[in-house]
Each structure stands twice: as C-alpha cells, then as structure tokens.
Amino acid sequence: MPQPPVFDVLGVGFGPSNLALAIAVTEYNATARAEDVVTAHFLERQPRFGWHRGMLIEDATMQVSFLKDLVTLRNPNSTFTFLSYLHGRGRLVDFINHKNLFPLRVEFHDYFEWAAGRVDDLVSYGHDVVDVRPVAEGGVITHFDVVSTTAAGEVEVRRARNLVLATGLRPALPEGVHASERVWHNRDFLHRVESLADPRRLVVVGAGQSGAEVTAFLHDRFPSAEVCAVFARYGYSPADDSPFANRIFDPAAVDDYFAAPEPVKRKLMDYHGNTNYAVVDHDLIAELYRRVYREKVVGRQRLRLLNLSRVAELDDRADGVAVTVESLATGAREVLDADAIVYATGYREADPTALLGGLAGRCARDAQGRLSVGRDYRLATDDDLLAGLYLQGGTEHTHGISSSLLSNTSVRVGEILRSVLDRRTPVVPEAVPAAVPSQPEYAISVSRVS
Image 1 (cartoon, rainbow, N blue to C red):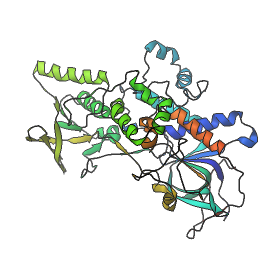
Image 2 (image 1 turned 90 degrees about the horizontal axis):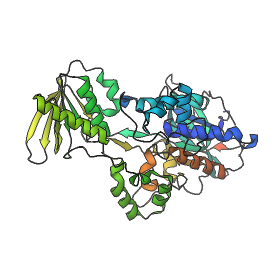
Image 3 (image 1 turned 45 degrees about the vertical axis):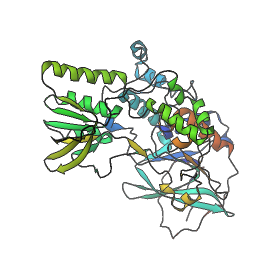
Image 4 (image 1 turned 30 degrees about the vertical axis):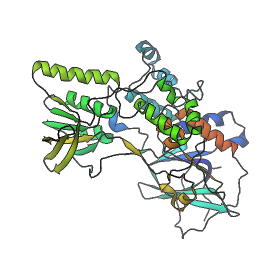
C-alpha cells in the first residue's frame, strides 16, 4: 500500500480554534525558508464552516471584545484581524462610529467565514474522523495515520507528525431528558423554531446568557404566546465583566493557573466563575425586567419567570409537552402544557481521547483521572510516543477558564505552533504502521503533501 500524504500538523475539527491555528501556520509559512515550511491540514465533519449557527440570533452580541479575534493578540499586524475584515466589507468607519467593543454575533460569524475562506486550501469539509492509528519505526511511534470518511462513504488516510484535537463541546441535557421534535437544546434553537406555528406556550430552562436570549427571542417572535422561563436561581445573575475580573482571561493568567497548586486552581474557578458561567449581560437582564414590569402594568402577563424552580417531570407527547414545574421553596407543582421546551443547559467537554483508540492508554492522567497536559497544550504520554498530541479545548483543569473561550485562542495557537517547531526532528522516510488488523484500500484525495 502506498504511504499516505504526510503533514507536520493535522487538525481534527475546524471551529475557531483550529481556524486560528491554520492562520498561524499560513502566516509563519509566508516568511519561512522553504526547508522550514510547516505542512498542515484540517478535517471537519460539517459540510462548511459553522460556529453555533443555531444561536445566531440577529440582535445577540458577542461577550468578548473584537480585539480578541483570531489573530490580534498574537499578531496585530495580521491581515486576518477583525478590523481587516471590516475594511474589506466596507464597514470599518461605520463600526468605529458605533463606539462598541462587542460586535453582533452574526457579524463575528461572518468574520470567521471570511477568514476560513482565505485558508480553505488547508481544510477538508465533510470528513468524519473515525480512527487514529499509530505508525512506528524502531520501536517508537513517530506518526499517526488519521482515517476519515466522507458523506459518500469514501475512506481517506493522512499521516501526521502532530495531531491537534479541537472537537468542541457537546450539548448537555439533564439526566433522563432526550431531544425530540418538541424538546430542544438551545444549540439547535434557530433550526427548530421555524417549525412552530402560532404556539400557545413555550418553556425555557436555564438562567445563563443563552437561556435569557432564547426567552427574549421567543417573547418577541410570538406575541400571542406565553413564555415561561424556569430556573433554580432567584433571578438572572449579571456577568462580572469589570476590568480587574477580566484579567482572568489574560494570557498571563494561563501561566498563573497552570503553575498554581490544585487547591488554588479550585479557588480561582470559584472566585471567577461568574465571569462566564450561568450569567447574563446587564443590558439583557434590564430588558427582561422591563418587559415583566410593563406586562404587570398593562395587566397581561405573557412573560413568566418561574424562579426557585425546577422541571420535575416532562411528558413528551405527540401534541406537545407537559412540563411539571416544582417550586424549590414550597414543593408546590404546576403543570404547563407547552408546544415546545428549550433547554439552555450548557455544554460539557467531549473526551478528546475518544478517537485515539489504544493510543488513549498511552496518555498520562492525574490522580483524579484527568488528562495530564503540558503548558504547550501537548498531552503527556509515555516515552515511546514521540509524535505530538495537542488539545484545543478540554484543558480547563490545567489552563483555566479561558480554555474553551475565544479570549486566548490567538495566543494559544501561537504557543502550539512554537511547540511543534521546537520539537521538530528529522523525518523518518521508511516509517511503517504499527501492527493493526488488515486494512482496506484507501482513497487519498489531498492537495498538500510533504
């Protein structure tokens, strides 16, 4: 069997994190000597670039400054900055006059698509990675063979000296709750809301930013419907976006967190969790309160905030959902017959080693069973695994609260690229696959081969 094409860096997933890495590689190669060029490719399951499309509500804004884009903190001279995007779109002056650090979410998504389009030679969309196999030479693993399948059922193999896993987060639903035609996670919100025709009542579960946005959207979109927001808190809690608290997202804060002992790490998360988790922008909280008060004045209450409450039972029927809401204070229950229920209950980290098969056993873990990750985002492995495994995401326990956020993305990819360059070793031309079961013939369709 012919050797697959070999890349210095192969990325699994092509969301903002690996997009930023593709840009970093492109910018490095633009000035590198021919012998120092980094060959890279990325595999993405989706048919095109997309980032939380189900929550691209038209008037929703980013919770992060436009300066924390894909490149600025790493290279403010880059042509991939958000400001370069605005200039190319003819909106730079308009944005400056707007006097706002926080773009619309749909605009930032368009920026991501614009950037992705400029590096589309480095990505294969519609490719689902199904296996990662070790390639050994001289008793040590020097490469990985990454197997992917297309929607048409074609199987392709690419060989990598370094693998960067950026497989994103998974929607979290409460135990026993399953998504259906009328039970949604907010990830799919805009894709599903079009199916509603003149609903009478809608229920939203969750007290964070997404829950508040969905509640406001439904209240606007369906002026005849009752919208019930259910959450355990007394009310929506504001996000702490004050300047000193925001230092938890600084690049230097990653160093502090990484070096801190475990008890200090836990304290930092407790102290500053309200910068990101289960919190809502001040303006949105004020707007929802105005709506509730206005409806009390006019005597028609369509927006109901059921605080100190939980969903105790859920009966998903063909004609709707019966939602039993229980007061945490009194235990009293109320059954809400609704057309749909939206769970804005967050996300959980996916196991980044799920794709690695037997290689996962070579990854070191701490006393709590969590992956051991170096400061350069490289997984700690046994000594016989020389090829690099890097994580973009799944590192909150080692690198802090910004691990799954945009704040440090541009800096992080620079650190990963620097680690790859620092660890470069001469290519072993005759590397052979480690012992694996017999393999089928693979179709290989890639453009950049080292």
